[in-house]
Image (tube, rainbow, N blue to C red; front, side, top):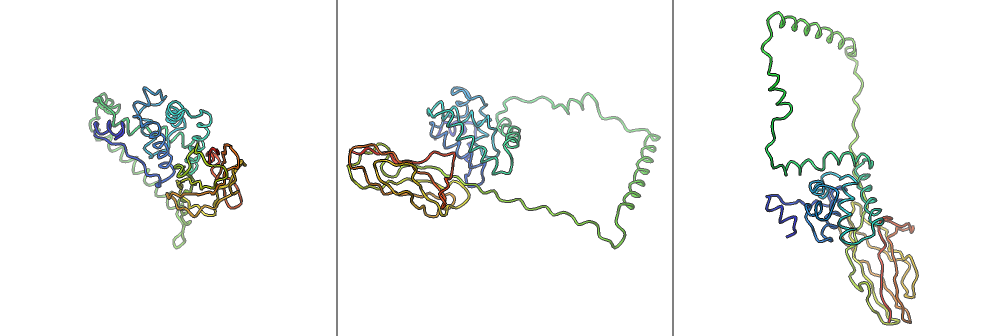
Length: 313
């Protein structure tokens, strides 16, 4: 059990992990959860206090809830204290990668980045703030006004008669205006405009799940042939078809220019294998690959390439 789950169980509430397949905002929150687990799964209170995030624990918890896209400022504080401060990742590269993810989630919901930021800033802290309330609130502003200005007594008969007359006159004017604006009998009025059904948001995303064979630093014999395998998951909502793993550089080790990736459904993982022949003399081989389409165009520009890193001895 993580620190957050333990603390939540003591309060009677458990954090609800978002389903990444339920939409772009939930997928973005899922990525935040993955980062949090990689960094040792600290509690949101610890992130906001000991780790120094410039955001409240309720804002950080709301960002990971997946019900609304957090502001970029809250997102960056969530990511900074975990990826940069705790995991030691490069600050600017991390900022670019997560900014691209955040903007992709905002655009996938049909809102620009400013709209997404404004909407999230008004909604992300309210549920948690209400849950964390520990003091008994005093009377609301409306209740205070009701005490200061009690309900007036019933009006006198002359005043009531005057009001009734004014209302009747207004009703007569309204009826005459309606009769003037209404179409003649038997003539149809303008057709009501139909509201188009909202379109479904499609987005493309991938998650690197790890090396299956030959992890970084593996030593291979000179001239030996071996197979490098990676596992990648389709974390988007569109199937992968006609996609390839394309080599980006040359090294003393030999590998094909590109390898075809089988069709992968959303949420499914795939293992991609590349046959490699080691160099004939001692060397270090680090070969980079990126996913491309059939025409060779690179996909997932904000993501790092995957690579093979072996030592030939």
